[in-house]
Image 1 (cartoon, helix red, strand yellow):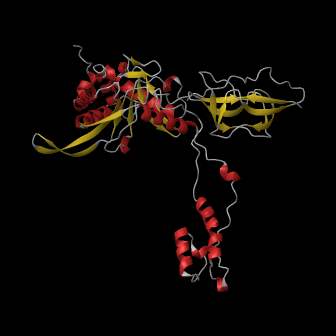
Image 2 (cartoon, rainbow, N blue to C red; image 1 turned 90 degrees about the vertical axis):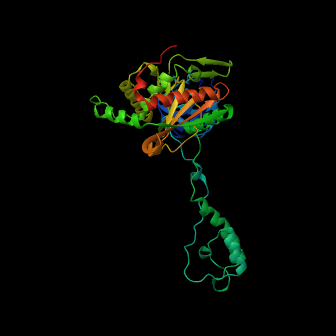
Amino acid sequence: MSQFTFKMPDLGEGTVDAEIVAWHTKPGDVVSEDQLIVEVMTDKAAVEVPAPVSGRVVSVTGAPGDKVAVGSPLIVFELTDGAAAPAMAAAPAPTIPAAATPTAPAATAAPATRATATLTASAATAPTPAAVPIARQGRVMTSPANRRRAREAGIDLTTVAGSGPGGRILRADLQTAAPRQAVADAADTTEIKVIGLRRLIAERMSEAKRNIPHFAYVEEVDVTELESLRMHLNHSRPKDSGSLSYLPLVVMALTRVLESFPQCNVLYDAARGVLVRHRAVHLGIATQTPDGLKVPVVHDAQSLGLWEMAAEIRHLAERARANKATRAELTGSTITITSLGKLGGIASTPIINQPEVAIIGLNKAVERPVVMHGAIAVRRIMNLSSSFDHRFVDGYDAAAMIQALKERLEHPATIFIPTVKS
C-alpha cells in the first residue's frame, strides 16, 4: 500500500496559514473521498476541508487551536491497493459554511464558524491525580509549627495521613501532602483553549482598541413618547409581525440623522490612507449568538420602512444565531448599533467595529423621576453610549450627531420625516 500526504490547501485571499478548529477524523479511521475531515479558520472565513482521496488515516498534524501553514503536511493517508494518489496535492474545493464571517471589521467583528470553543484535550494526557485521603474524624495531632506550615500551604490536615507515633503528622508528611493537594486543587479547574471564533473576536477587539483612539459620548434620552408610540404600534401591528422593540425605531432615526452627518458613516482604509464615505447606510447589528458575537448587516437601511426594518433585523438575528447567515449578510456594514437589551445597564463604552469610525450603544430604558418645568415627573429614560474614532470624527460633530438623534427619539413623529436639504 502507498501513502499520500495531503498538505494544507491554499484557501485564497492571501491566506498564509489556517487555524484548526475541529478534526472530524483521527488516525486509524477509514474515510471516503470528499468526506469532511477537518474544519479550519482563516482570518476571513471558516472552511470545511474534504478528503482528497479514499483511504485509512495514518496521521494528522496539529490539534484544535494550532495554526498550519499553507503547503505544510496536514494529514497522511494510506491508500487502498490499486488506488492512485492525486496528481496534485489539492483537495476538492473546500467549503465555506454559510455563516462564514460575523464581519471582518463590521465588516470586522470576526468570522463566524459552526465550531464553538473546544475544551483542551490536555486533560486526557495529564497524569492521573493521586487519590485524596478521606477526611478523618477526631483531633489532628501535630505540632504548632506544622499547623502553621499547613495553613500557609493551604493543606487540610484532616486529609493528611500521619506517620508519627499514634498517627501524629510530621513535617515529612506535609511535604508529601503538598503536591497531592496541588493536584486536587487543579482538578477543580477547567482549561479552555481560545480558538476559532472566540480567538478572532479577541484579536479583532484588541486590534481595534489598540489602533483606534476611542472617545466616548453618553447622553440620556427621554423615550417616554417613543415608548407610547411603540406600544400603540404593537397593539395595531400587522398580522404575523413580531413585537416591535426600540431597535428598529432607533435605526430609522439614525438613518435620517446620518444624512446630515455623513462623516460618521465612513470606513477607514488604513492600507491606502483613505476615508471611504458612503451615501447608503449599511447598518451592522451586533448580535450575541451561541458561537460568539456576530454583526449581521441591514444593507441600505435608509430605504426600509419601519415594519420592513423590524422584520429584517429579526430575520438577520435569527439566521446569525442559527449559524445560517451568508457571508453577504455578515459583511459590509458602515456603522454599527449594539444593544444589551434588558441587561443594558446605565452606560457602556462600546469598541468600534473597525474599519468603521462610530458605534452607537443602547442602554436599558427605565422609569425614574426627573424635573420637568419645575415639577417632578416620572419619565422613561434611556442612555445612548457612543464611541467614535477621534482621528476622523471631532468631538463637536459626534456630540451634534447624538443630539440630533436624541431630538428625533424624543419627538418620534420626526423619525418618519426625511431630513430637509438646505
